Image 1 (cartoon, rainbow, N blue to C red):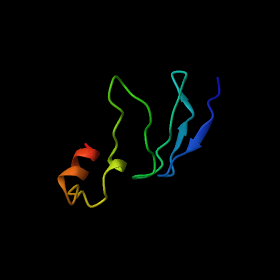
Image 2 (image 1 turned 120 degrees about the horizontal axis):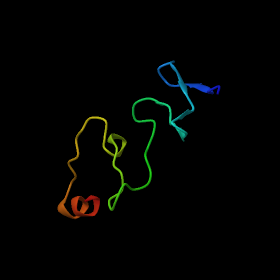
Image 3 (image 1 turned 180 degrees about the horizontal axis):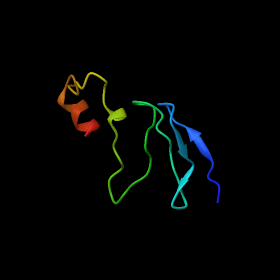
Image 4 (image 1 turned 45 degrees about the horizontal axis):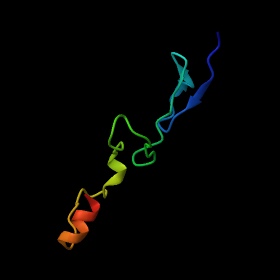
Length: 67
């Protein structure tokens, strides 16, 4: 059984499928945004936050909307 390989952002060749399941190759920092749910909440990624890590907002109303 011959596997097909793809190159990820680091330049490494990885198989397209592992144990029969498709693999998403590494695309780089903040390049891939997950979708879907594991259970009830949506999956969160570091791409959802600013790069400097500052999550402060101007007022309480905006903070409650983002929460």
